[in-house]
Image 1 (cartoon, rainbow, N blue to C red):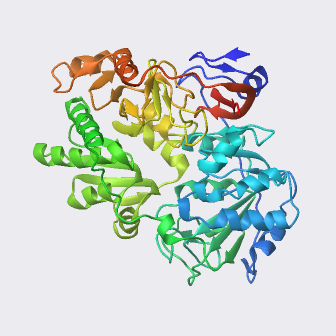
Image 2 (cartoon, rainbow, N blue to C red; image 1 turned 90 degrees about the vertical axis):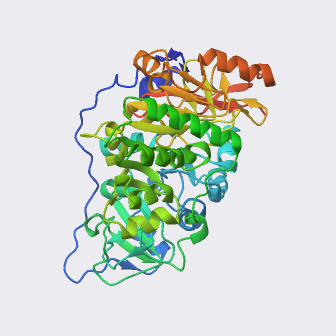
Image 3 (cartoon, helix red, strand yellow; image 1 turned 180 degrees about the vertical axis):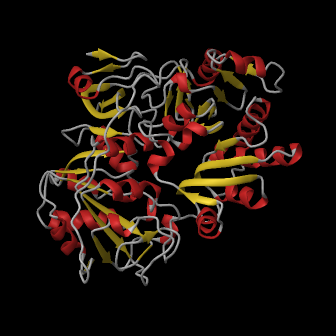
Length: 512
Protein backbone atom coordinates (compact mmCIF):
# COMPACT_ATOMS: atom_id res chain seq x y z
CA UNK A 1 0.00 0.00 0.00
CA UNK A 2 1.37 3.43 -0.98
CA UNK A 3 0.55 6.66 0.81
CA UNK A 4 0.23 9.96 -1.01
CA UNK A 5 1.06 13.47 0.19
CA UNK A 6 -2.26 13.95 2.00
CA UNK A 7 -2.06 10.57 3.73
CA UNK A 8 -4.50 8.62 1.56
CA UNK A 9 -3.63 4.96 1.08
CA UNK A 10 -3.46 3.83 -2.55
CA UNK A 11 -3.16 0.12 -3.41
CA UNK A 12 0.32 -0.54 -4.78
CA UNK A 13 -0.75 -1.79 -8.22
CA UNK A 14 -2.67 1.44 -8.89
CA UNK A 15 0.08 3.60 -7.40
CA UNK A 16 2.56 2.04 -9.82
CA UNK A 17 0.26 2.63 -12.82
CA UNK A 18 -0.82 6.19 -12.08
CA UNK A 19 1.59 7.56 -9.52
CA UNK A 20 0.43 9.11 -6.25
CA UNK A 21 -0.50 12.71 -5.52
CA UNK A 22 2.51 14.70 -4.30
CA UNK A 23 1.13 18.23 -4.27
CA UNK A 24 -1.01 20.49 -6.46
CA UNK A 25 1.92 21.74 -8.55
CA UNK A 26 4.36 18.87 -8.01
CA UNK A 27 3.95 17.15 -11.35
CA UNK A 28 5.34 18.93 -14.39
CA UNK A 29 4.01 18.13 -17.84
CA UNK A 30 5.93 17.93 -21.09
CA UNK A 31 4.54 15.80 -23.89
CA UNK A 32 3.81 15.65 -27.58
CA UNK A 33 0.09 15.96 -28.26
CA UNK A 34 -1.66 12.81 -29.38
CA UNK A 35 -3.44 12.86 -32.71
CA UNK A 36 -6.38 10.93 -34.07
CA UNK A 37 -6.47 9.01 -37.32
CA UNK A 38 -7.51 10.93 -40.43
CA UNK A 39 -9.34 9.45 -43.39
CA UNK A 40 -9.20 11.93 -46.26
CA UNK A 41 -12.30 13.16 -48.07
CA UNK A 42 -12.28 13.86 -51.79
CA UNK A 43 -14.68 16.10 -53.74
CA UNK A 44 -18.04 14.43 -54.14
CA UNK A 45 -17.69 12.22 -51.04
CA UNK A 46 -20.61 12.42 -48.63
CA UNK A 47 -20.30 12.32 -44.87
CA UNK A 48 -24.04 11.80 -44.46
CA UNK A 49 -25.12 8.38 -43.17
CA UNK A 50 -28.61 6.95 -42.84
CA UNK A 51 -28.57 5.61 -39.30
CA UNK A 52 -26.68 5.22 -36.04
CA UNK A 53 -26.04 1.57 -36.93
CA UNK A 54 -24.46 2.51 -40.24
CA UNK A 55 -22.27 5.05 -38.46
CA UNK A 56 -21.11 2.44 -35.93
CA UNK A 57 -20.27 0.05 -38.77
CA UNK A 58 -18.44 2.72 -40.80
CA UNK A 59 -16.46 3.83 -37.75
CA UNK A 60 -14.91 0.37 -37.43
CA UNK A 61 -15.92 0.05 -33.78
CA UNK A 62 -14.85 -3.32 -32.40
CA UNK A 63 -14.66 -5.16 -29.11
CA UNK A 64 -12.28 -3.58 -26.62
CA UNK A 65 -12.36 -0.05 -28.03
CA UNK A 66 -13.16 3.28 -26.33
CA UNK A 67 -16.24 5.38 -27.11
CA UNK A 68 -16.91 8.90 -25.86
CA UNK A 69 -19.86 11.25 -25.40
CA UNK A 70 -20.28 14.73 -23.95
CA UNK A 71 -22.65 15.77 -21.16
CA UNK A 72 -23.84 19.16 -22.45
CA UNK A 73 -27.35 17.70 -22.82
CA UNK A 74 -27.43 16.83 -19.10
CA UNK A 75 -30.73 15.20 -18.03
CA UNK A 76 -32.24 15.72 -21.47
CA UNK A 77 -29.67 13.61 -23.30
CA UNK A 78 -30.95 10.94 -25.69
CA UNK A 79 -27.71 10.37 -27.60
CA UNK A 80 -25.70 8.19 -25.22
CA UNK A 81 -28.55 5.76 -24.53
CA UNK A 82 -29.52 5.64 -28.22
CA UNK A 83 -26.00 4.83 -29.38
CA UNK A 84 -25.20 2.35 -26.62
CA UNK A 85 -28.44 0.44 -27.27
CA UNK A 86 -27.46 0.05 -30.92
CA UNK A 87 -23.92 -1.00 -30.02
CA UNK A 88 -25.26 -3.63 -27.64
CA UNK A 89 -27.69 -4.92 -30.27
CA UNK A 90 -24.80 -5.32 -32.70
CA UNK A 91 -23.02 -7.62 -30.25
CA UNK A 92 -20.02 -5.37 -29.59
CA UNK A 93 -18.54 -5.96 -26.12
CA UNK A 94 -15.79 -5.02 -23.69
CA UNK A 95 -15.93 -1.28 -24.37
CA UNK A 96 -14.52 1.61 -22.35
CA UNK A 97 -17.10 4.36 -21.90
CA UNK A 98 -15.37 7.75 -21.76
CA UNK A 99 -18.25 10.19 -21.35
CA UNK A 100 -17.31 13.61 -19.99
CA UNK A 101 -19.93 12.99 -17.27
CA UNK A 102 -22.80 10.60 -16.62
CA UNK A 103 -26.26 11.81 -15.60
CA UNK A 104 -29.32 10.23 -13.98
CA UNK A 105 -30.87 9.73 -17.41
CA UNK A 106 -28.10 7.29 -18.29
CA UNK A 107 -29.36 4.47 -16.03
CA UNK A 108 -29.44 1.99 -18.99
CA UNK A 109 -25.63 1.91 -18.62
CA UNK A 110 -26.20 -0.49 -15.72
CA UNK A 111 -27.60 -3.19 -18.01
CA UNK A 112 -24.75 -2.68 -20.47
CA UNK A 113 -22.30 -3.28 -17.62
CA UNK A 114 -24.11 -6.44 -16.54
CA UNK A 115 -24.16 -7.71 -20.14
CA UNK A 116 -20.45 -7.08 -20.73
CA UNK A 117 -20.95 -4.31 -23.28
CA UNK A 118 -19.19 -1.82 -20.97
CA UNK A 119 -16.29 -3.12 -18.90
CA UNK A 120 -14.47 0.14 -18.14
CA UNK A 121 -15.65 3.69 -17.44
CA UNK A 122 -13.81 6.97 -17.17
CA UNK A 123 -15.80 10.10 -16.42
CA UNK A 124 -15.98 13.24 -14.33
CA UNK A 125 -19.00 12.10 -12.38
CA UNK A 126 -21.57 9.39 -11.76
CA UNK A 127 -25.09 10.17 -10.62
CA UNK A 128 -27.93 8.38 -8.89
CA UNK A 129 -28.43 4.69 -9.78
CA UNK A 130 -25.26 4.39 -11.86
CA UNK A 131 -23.15 5.76 -9.03
CA UNK A 132 -24.88 3.47 -6.54
CA UNK A 133 -24.34 0.43 -8.75
CA UNK A 134 -20.64 1.24 -9.10
CA UNK A 135 -20.34 1.79 -5.34
CA UNK A 136 -21.85 -1.64 -4.70
CA UNK A 137 -19.28 -3.33 -6.92
CA UNK A 138 -21.11 -4.00 -10.20
CA UNK A 139 -17.89 -3.56 -12.21
CA UNK A 140 -14.82 -5.73 -12.09
CA UNK A 141 -12.54 -2.82 -13.03
CA UNK A 142 -12.58 0.46 -11.09
CA UNK A 143 -13.99 3.58 -12.71
CA UNK A 144 -11.43 6.35 -13.31
CA UNK A 145 -12.68 9.77 -12.19
CA UNK A 146 -11.03 12.78 -13.83
CA UNK A 147 -11.60 16.51 -13.47
CA UNK A 148 -12.61 18.47 -16.56
CA UNK A 149 -9.06 19.72 -16.98
CA UNK A 150 -7.60 16.33 -16.12
CA UNK A 151 -9.74 14.64 -18.78
CA UNK A 152 -8.58 17.12 -21.42
CA UNK A 153 -4.96 16.55 -20.36
CA UNK A 154 -5.35 12.75 -20.51
CA UNK A 155 -6.86 12.93 -24.02
CA UNK A 156 -4.26 15.33 -25.38
CA UNK A 157 -1.42 13.34 -23.82
CA UNK A 158 -2.72 10.05 -25.21
CA UNK A 159 -3.40 8.48 -21.81
CA UNK A 160 -7.08 8.36 -22.78
CA UNK A 161 -7.33 7.35 -26.42
CA UNK A 162 -10.80 7.67 -27.95
CA UNK A 163 -11.53 5.34 -30.86
CA UNK A 164 -14.96 6.72 -31.69
CA UNK A 165 -16.58 9.93 -30.41
CA UNK A 166 -20.36 10.12 -30.77
CA UNK A 167 -21.12 13.81 -30.37
CA UNK A 168 -24.66 15.14 -30.23
CA UNK A 169 -25.07 18.59 -31.79
CA UNK A 170 -28.14 20.85 -31.80
CA UNK A 171 -27.25 21.90 -35.34
CA UNK A 172 -24.91 20.66 -38.08
CA UNK A 173 -24.44 20.87 -41.80
CA UNK A 174 -23.68 17.96 -44.14
CA UNK A 175 -19.93 18.31 -43.59
CA UNK A 176 -20.10 18.28 -39.79
CA UNK A 177 -19.73 21.94 -38.88
CA UNK A 178 -21.66 21.91 -35.61
CA UNK A 179 -22.70 24.22 -32.80
CA UNK A 180 -24.84 24.15 -29.66
CA UNK A 181 -26.43 27.58 -29.91
CA UNK A 182 -28.88 26.97 -32.77
CA UNK A 183 -31.52 24.31 -33.29
CA UNK A 184 -34.52 22.72 -31.61
CA UNK A 185 -32.70 21.56 -28.47
CA UNK A 186 -29.90 24.02 -27.83
CA UNK A 187 -27.27 23.59 -25.11
CA UNK A 188 -24.99 26.58 -25.72
CA UNK A 189 -21.28 25.83 -25.45
CA UNK A 190 -19.90 22.49 -26.70
CA UNK A 191 -16.67 22.95 -24.77
CA UNK A 192 -16.29 19.37 -23.56
CA UNK A 193 -17.06 17.88 -26.98
CA UNK A 194 -14.41 19.96 -28.71
CA UNK A 195 -11.53 18.02 -27.15
CA UNK A 196 -13.06 14.68 -28.18
CA UNK A 197 -13.62 15.95 -31.72
CA UNK A 198 -10.01 17.04 -32.06
CA UNK A 199 -8.33 13.86 -30.79
CA UNK A 200 -10.66 10.89 -31.44
CA UNK A 201 -9.87 8.54 -34.34
CA UNK A 202 -13.43 8.74 -35.64
CA UNK A 203 -15.93 11.52 -34.94
CA UNK A 204 -19.63 11.15 -35.61
CA UNK A 205 -21.93 14.15 -35.30
CA UNK A 206 -25.50 13.24 -34.36
CA UNK A 207 -28.06 15.99 -34.89
CA UNK A 208 -31.77 16.59 -35.25
CA UNK A 209 -31.28 19.87 -37.09
CA UNK A 210 -29.46 19.66 -40.42
CA UNK A 211 -28.89 23.10 -41.94
CA UNK A 212 -27.36 24.32 -45.23
CA UNK A 213 -23.58 24.49 -45.53
CA UNK A 214 -21.78 26.27 -43.95
CA UNK A 215 -23.33 26.09 -40.49
CA UNK A 216 -22.08 28.98 -38.38
CA UNK A 217 -20.93 29.72 -35.77
CA UNK A 218 -18.62 26.71 -35.81
CA UNK A 219 -17.95 25.02 -32.47
CA UNK A 220 -16.81 21.72 -33.94
CA UNK A 221 -15.26 22.18 -37.41
CA UNK A 222 -15.70 19.91 -40.42
CA UNK A 223 -12.03 18.94 -40.50
CA UNK A 224 -12.52 17.03 -37.22
CA UNK A 225 -15.65 15.16 -38.35
CA UNK A 226 -15.92 11.87 -40.23
CA UNK A 227 -19.68 11.30 -40.46
CA UNK A 228 -23.01 13.03 -39.81
CA UNK A 229 -26.23 11.26 -38.81
CA UNK A 230 -29.65 12.90 -38.56
CA UNK A 231 -32.00 11.48 -35.93
CA UNK A 232 -35.50 12.43 -34.88
CA UNK A 233 -34.40 13.85 -31.54
CA UNK A 234 -31.12 14.34 -29.71
CA UNK A 235 -33.01 14.85 -26.46
CA UNK A 236 -35.56 16.72 -24.40
CA UNK A 237 -35.01 20.50 -24.61
CA UNK A 238 -36.42 20.95 -21.10
CA UNK A 239 -33.87 18.53 -19.68
CA UNK A 240 -31.02 19.93 -21.73
CA UNK A 241 -31.52 23.52 -20.62
CA UNK A 242 -33.53 24.79 -17.71
CA UNK A 243 -35.32 28.09 -17.86
CA UNK A 244 -33.87 30.93 -15.83
CA UNK A 245 -31.82 29.44 -12.98
CA UNK A 246 -33.52 30.63 -9.81
CA UNK A 247 -31.53 32.11 -6.97
CA UNK A 248 -32.19 30.34 -3.70
CA UNK A 249 -34.74 31.72 -1.24
CA UNK A 250 -33.32 29.60 1.59
CA UNK A 251 -32.29 32.02 4.39
CA UNK A 252 -29.31 29.88 5.40
CA UNK A 253 -27.97 29.70 1.84
CA UNK A 254 -28.49 33.43 1.38
CA UNK A 255 -26.54 34.14 4.58
CA UNK A 256 -23.68 31.94 3.35
CA UNK A 257 -23.70 33.81 0.04
CA UNK A 258 -23.72 37.19 1.79
CA UNK A 259 -20.76 36.13 3.96
CA UNK A 260 -18.92 34.98 0.84
CA UNK A 261 -19.50 38.32 -0.85
CA UNK A 262 -18.07 40.11 2.17
CA UNK A 263 -14.98 37.91 1.96
CA UNK A 264 -14.51 38.65 -1.74
CA UNK A 265 -14.96 42.41 -1.40
CA UNK A 266 -12.55 42.54 1.57
CA UNK A 267 -9.89 40.58 -0.32
CA UNK A 268 -6.96 42.19 -2.16
CA UNK A 269 -8.34 40.77 -5.44
CA UNK A 270 -11.54 42.83 -5.49
CA UNK A 271 -10.56 45.69 -7.75
CA UNK A 272 -11.21 47.03 -11.22
CA UNK A 273 -10.78 44.29 -13.82
CA UNK A 274 -10.84 41.34 -11.41
CA UNK A 275 -12.01 37.92 -12.64
CA UNK A 276 -14.19 35.29 -11.05
CA UNK A 277 -16.16 32.08 -11.45
CA UNK A 278 -19.32 31.31 -9.48
CA UNK A 279 -21.43 28.18 -9.31
CA UNK A 280 -24.84 27.29 -10.68
CA UNK A 281 -26.91 26.51 -7.60
CA UNK A 282 -27.64 27.25 -3.96
CA UNK A 283 -25.33 29.64 -2.18
CA UNK A 284 -22.75 29.76 -4.98
CA UNK A 285 -25.29 31.14 -7.44
CA UNK A 286 -26.58 33.67 -4.93
CA UNK A 287 -23.06 35.08 -4.51
CA UNK A 288 -23.37 36.58 -7.99
CA UNK A 289 -26.39 38.63 -6.92
CA UNK A 290 -24.69 40.03 -3.83
CA UNK A 291 -21.49 40.65 -5.76
CA UNK A 292 -23.36 42.53 -8.49
CA UNK A 293 -24.86 44.84 -5.84
CA UNK A 294 -21.42 45.46 -4.34
CA UNK A 295 -19.88 46.16 -7.75
CA UNK A 296 -22.58 48.74 -8.55
CA UNK A 297 -22.07 50.40 -5.16
CA UNK A 298 -18.27 50.46 -5.51
CA UNK A 299 -18.23 51.30 -9.24
CA UNK A 300 -16.08 48.23 -9.96
CA UNK A 301 -16.28 46.13 -13.10
CA UNK A 302 -14.94 42.63 -13.63
CA UNK A 303 -12.66 41.98 -16.58
CA UNK A 304 -14.16 38.57 -17.22
CA UNK A 305 -16.19 35.75 -15.71
CA UNK A 306 -15.39 32.11 -16.38
CA UNK A 307 -17.79 29.18 -16.47
CA UNK A 308 -19.95 26.97 -16.43
CA UNK A 309 -22.22 29.97 -16.83
CA UNK A 310 -25.75 30.88 -15.83
CA UNK A 311 -28.00 33.60 -17.15
CA UNK A 312 -27.34 35.71 -14.06
CA UNK A 313 -23.71 36.22 -15.01
CA UNK A 314 -24.79 36.93 -18.58
CA UNK A 315 -27.14 39.63 -17.27
CA UNK A 316 -24.14 41.17 -15.53
CA UNK A 317 -22.35 41.06 -18.89
CA UNK A 318 -25.25 42.85 -20.56
CA UNK A 319 -25.30 45.46 -17.81
CA UNK A 320 -21.61 46.13 -18.25
CA UNK A 321 -20.56 44.84 -14.82
CA UNK A 322 -18.48 42.15 -16.59
CA UNK A 323 -16.40 42.87 -19.69
CA UNK A 324 -16.38 39.37 -21.20
CA UNK A 325 -17.50 35.87 -20.31
CA UNK A 326 -15.72 32.72 -21.45
CA UNK A 327 -17.80 29.59 -21.40
CA UNK A 328 -17.13 25.87 -21.47
CA UNK A 329 -20.67 24.91 -20.36
CA UNK A 330 -23.95 26.87 -20.51
CA UNK A 331 -26.29 25.94 -17.67
CA UNK A 332 -29.57 27.61 -18.59
CA UNK A 333 -31.50 29.36 -21.36
CA UNK A 334 -30.17 32.75 -20.36
CA UNK A 335 -26.61 31.58 -20.94
CA UNK A 336 -27.57 29.83 -24.19
CA UNK A 337 -29.25 32.98 -25.54
CA UNK A 338 -26.21 35.00 -24.53
CA UNK A 339 -23.68 32.81 -26.32
CA UNK A 340 -25.88 33.02 -29.41
CA UNK A 341 -26.35 36.79 -29.37
CA UNK A 342 -23.54 38.52 -27.47
CA UNK A 343 -20.19 38.98 -29.17
CA UNK A 344 -18.46 39.23 -25.77
CA UNK A 345 -19.60 35.74 -24.79
CA UNK A 346 -16.89 33.33 -25.96
CA UNK A 347 -17.03 29.57 -26.22
CA UNK A 348 -13.92 27.65 -25.13
CA UNK A 349 -12.86 24.01 -24.99
CA UNK A 350 -12.28 22.05 -21.78
CA UNK A 351 -8.57 22.16 -22.57
CA UNK A 352 -8.55 25.96 -22.86
CA UNK A 353 -10.56 26.04 -19.65
CA UNK A 354 -8.55 23.87 -17.31
CA UNK A 355 -5.90 21.57 -18.83
CA UNK A 356 -2.98 21.63 -16.35
CA UNK A 357 -0.63 20.14 -18.94
CA UNK A 358 -1.28 22.63 -21.72
CA UNK A 359 0.34 25.94 -22.54
CA UNK A 360 -1.93 27.88 -20.21
CA UNK A 361 -5.46 27.37 -18.87
CA UNK A 362 -8.14 29.98 -18.24
CA UNK A 363 -8.45 28.86 -14.61
CA UNK A 364 -4.87 30.02 -14.05
CA UNK A 365 -5.96 33.61 -14.72
CA UNK A 366 -8.80 33.53 -12.16
CA UNK A 367 -8.73 35.87 -9.20
CA UNK A 368 -11.69 34.35 -7.35
CA UNK A 369 -13.64 31.11 -7.55
CA UNK A 370 -16.72 30.21 -5.52
CA UNK A 371 -17.31 26.47 -5.05
CA UNK A 372 -19.53 24.13 -3.04
CA UNK A 373 -18.84 20.89 -1.17
CA UNK A 374 -20.43 17.74 0.19
CA UNK A 375 -17.78 17.57 2.91
CA UNK A 376 -14.73 19.53 4.07
CA UNK A 377 -12.29 18.21 6.65
CA UNK A 378 -10.00 19.84 9.17
CA UNK A 379 -7.15 19.74 6.64
CA UNK A 380 -9.39 21.72 4.23
CA UNK A 381 -9.67 18.74 1.84
CA UNK A 382 -12.94 18.78 -0.10
CA UNK A 383 -15.27 15.96 -1.14
CA UNK A 384 -17.77 16.51 -3.96
CA UNK A 385 -17.95 12.86 -5.04
CA UNK A 386 -19.36 10.55 -2.35
CA UNK A 387 -22.25 11.04 0.04
CA UNK A 388 -22.28 10.51 3.78
CA UNK A 389 -23.08 6.83 3.09
CA UNK A 390 -19.97 6.42 0.94
CA UNK A 391 -21.97 6.04 -2.27
CA UNK A 392 -20.80 7.84 -5.42
CA UNK A 393 -23.33 10.50 -6.33
CA UNK A 394 -21.37 13.53 -7.48
CA UNK A 395 -18.78 14.79 -9.93
CA UNK A 396 -15.22 16.02 -9.81
CA UNK A 397 -16.07 18.58 -12.50
CA UNK A 398 -13.80 21.61 -12.51
CA UNK A 399 -13.56 21.74 -8.72
CA UNK A 400 -9.87 20.93 -8.29
CA UNK A 401 -9.00 22.76 -11.54
CA UNK A 402 -10.43 26.11 -10.48
CA UNK A 403 -9.32 25.82 -6.85
CA UNK A 404 -5.72 25.21 -7.97
CA UNK A 405 -5.78 28.05 -10.49
CA UNK A 406 -7.57 30.86 -8.64
CA UNK A 407 -5.81 33.27 -6.32
CA UNK A 408 -8.73 33.05 -3.88
CA UNK A 409 -10.82 29.89 -3.62
CA UNK A 410 -13.94 29.91 -1.47
CA UNK A 411 -15.81 26.76 -0.43
CA UNK A 412 -19.42 27.47 0.54
CA UNK A 413 -21.33 25.03 2.73
CA UNK A 414 -23.73 24.89 5.67
CA UNK A 415 -22.10 23.25 8.69
CA UNK A 416 -24.92 20.67 8.70
CA UNK A 417 -26.91 19.27 5.78
CA UNK A 418 -29.87 17.00 6.51
CA UNK A 419 -28.68 16.16 10.05
CA UNK A 420 -25.26 15.26 8.62
CA UNK A 421 -22.18 17.37 9.43
CA UNK A 422 -20.42 18.77 6.36
CA UNK A 423 -17.29 19.84 8.23
CA UNK A 424 -15.68 16.65 9.49
CA UNK A 425 -12.43 15.21 10.80
CA UNK A 426 -11.69 13.35 7.54
CA UNK A 427 -13.72 13.50 4.33
CA UNK A 428 -14.82 10.24 2.72
CA UNK A 429 -13.21 11.07 -0.61
CA UNK A 430 -10.73 13.81 -1.50
CA UNK A 431 -11.29 15.59 -4.79
CA UNK A 432 -9.64 18.93 -4.02
CA UNK A 433 -6.64 19.00 -1.65
CA UNK A 434 -6.63 21.40 1.27
CA UNK A 435 -3.65 23.32 -0.09
CA UNK A 436 -5.95 24.57 -2.90
CA UNK A 437 -8.63 25.86 -0.50
CA UNK A 438 -8.32 29.33 0.98
CA UNK A 439 -11.56 30.09 2.84
CA UNK A 440 -14.47 27.95 4.03
CA UNK A 441 -17.67 29.98 4.25
CA UNK A 442 -20.64 28.87 6.35
CA UNK A 443 -23.79 30.42 7.83
CA UNK A 444 -21.96 30.78 11.17
CA UNK A 445 -18.86 32.42 9.78
CA UNK A 446 -15.63 31.58 7.99
CA UNK A 447 -12.44 29.61 8.47
CA UNK A 448 -9.32 30.80 6.67
CA UNK A 449 -6.67 28.27 5.72
CA UNK A 450 -3.81 28.99 8.16
CA UNK A 451 -1.40 28.76 5.24
CA UNK A 452 -2.90 32.01 3.88
CA UNK A 453 -1.49 34.44 6.43
CA UNK A 454 -1.98 37.27 3.94
CA UNK A 455 -5.74 36.65 3.95
CA UNK A 456 -5.88 36.35 7.74
CA UNK A 457 -4.32 39.80 7.87
CA UNK A 458 -6.60 41.20 5.14
CA UNK A 459 -9.70 39.95 6.97
CA UNK A 460 -8.69 41.27 10.41
CA UNK A 461 -11.57 43.76 10.40
CA UNK A 462 -14.01 41.69 8.35
CA UNK A 463 -17.62 41.91 9.52
CA UNK A 464 -18.03 38.11 9.52
CA UNK A 465 -17.30 35.83 12.51
CA UNK A 466 -14.05 33.91 12.09
CA UNK A 467 -13.22 30.47 13.46
CA UNK A 468 -10.65 27.78 13.01
CA UNK A 469 -11.78 24.87 10.87
CA UNK A 470 -11.62 22.66 13.97
CA UNK A 471 -14.00 25.01 15.79
CA UNK A 472 -16.51 24.80 12.92
CA UNK A 473 -16.26 21.01 12.98
CA UNK A 474 -16.93 20.95 16.73
CA UNK A 475 -19.96 23.21 16.30
CA UNK A 476 -21.37 20.77 13.74
CA UNK A 477 -20.65 17.72 15.92
CA UNK A 478 -22.22 19.44 18.94
CA UNK A 479 -25.55 19.60 17.10
CA UNK A 480 -25.70 16.22 15.33
CA UNK A 481 -23.01 14.14 17.00
CA UNK A 482 -19.91 12.49 15.63
CA UNK A 483 -20.72 10.62 12.40
CA UNK A 484 -20.35 6.84 12.45
CA UNK A 485 -17.58 5.52 10.23
CA UNK A 486 -18.62 3.99 6.90
CA UNK A 487 -17.88 0.31 6.55
CA UNK A 488 -16.12 -0.45 3.29
CA UNK A 489 -14.88 -3.65 1.69
CA UNK A 490 -11.33 -3.83 0.34
CA UNK A 491 -12.40 -3.77 -3.31
CA UNK A 492 -11.61 -0.48 -5.08
CA UNK A 493 -14.53 0.68 -7.24
CA UNK A 494 -13.17 4.07 -8.34
CA UNK A 495 -9.79 5.71 -8.79
CA UNK A 496 -9.76 9.46 -8.16
CA UNK A 497 -7.20 11.12 -10.39
CA UNK A 498 -5.99 14.54 -9.43
CA UNK A 499 -5.91 16.89 -12.40
CA UNK A 500 -2.24 16.04 -13.04
CA UNK A 501 -3.02 12.32 -13.50
CA UNK A 502 -1.75 11.12 -10.11
CA UNK A 503 -4.05 9.36 -7.64
CA UNK A 504 -5.34 11.59 -4.87
CA UNK A 505 -7.75 8.98 -3.49
CA UNK A 506 -9.69 5.79 -4.19
CA UNK A 507 -13.30 4.83 -3.48
CA UNK A 508 -13.92 1.41 -2.03
CA UNK A 509 -17.01 -0.77 -2.29
CA UNK A 510 -19.62 0.01 0.34
CA UNK A 511 -20.51 -3.04 2.38
CA UNK A 512 -23.96 -4.39 1.51
